[in-house]
Figure 1 (cartoon, rainbow, N blue to C red):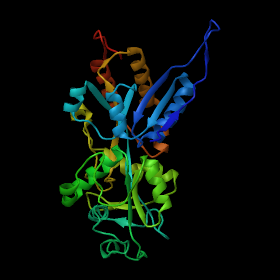
Figure 2: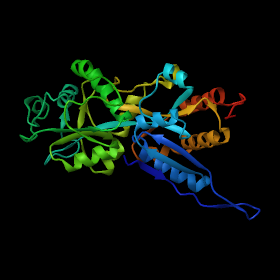
Figure 3: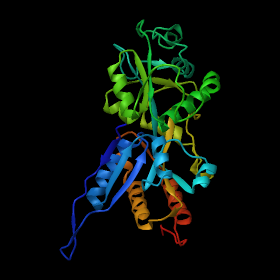
Figure 4: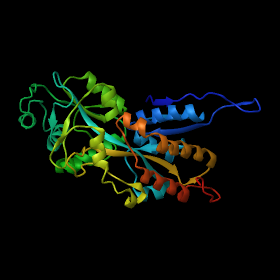
Length: 346
């Protein structure tokens, strides 16, 4: 299948000796969830350093496979790996960015922020228990809103996806039926609907198919001018997908006690918390065969922690707090080594 790729072109750097050398290239693959912000960071970093990023946005499942196969310098996943799996493959992970997964609809006459969906109703839509937009269970939360007698087409990811992992983690928490029948995974046996490749593929299907509903990272909803819904949160309030509400969900994250940085941010308590919030993670081998290349990866993400907050916020992501970034840098010092046991990050 065709892979979406971002390649930020590097200029040739002239050395004092007048000899030219090609700029360093770092390679990664995985999650489409953080793709917009990684693209912006890569562009800005290249302008400053001359280093380019070749990132294949192929989904979290593909990113995990590629880092395990050692075909890229780093993997990226929105589905965090538990400590046992990290240890099994000699990997470490760290959180890089946080953001929201957003249900979006294509219903004639319905604009962003008009349709309210309860936790139960969105689960029932994807289970196939609710098949019409004017179903009384949806209408009960949308007094005064004209809902059509139109079939619902559900759109989901066709690839192994961390966005799907976050979405199905939420559905498992709010629906016992979903948990029993389908559960939480990067790919599930969807009862109905159509699949799109990547966040961009889901967005394209929803924009094309009238009566459809899908789930995408918020930046894709904004960039594609999509009608996002108001979603009922753990507190019972119907809230909008906004940076402030993503931050509200992320505020209670206890990264210090998260073993291997394993953290799930769905259905968090709080008056304004967006219920489908998640983090995106970077995966690296603890022992590096190419320490100089690994250091270039760390330099890029160190720069992103220090300089990427403004770009992230403009794209409605939630930057990692400074205390978490400092914690991650200490982990790099203690965990990432070359084959002789020397630290890569000092």
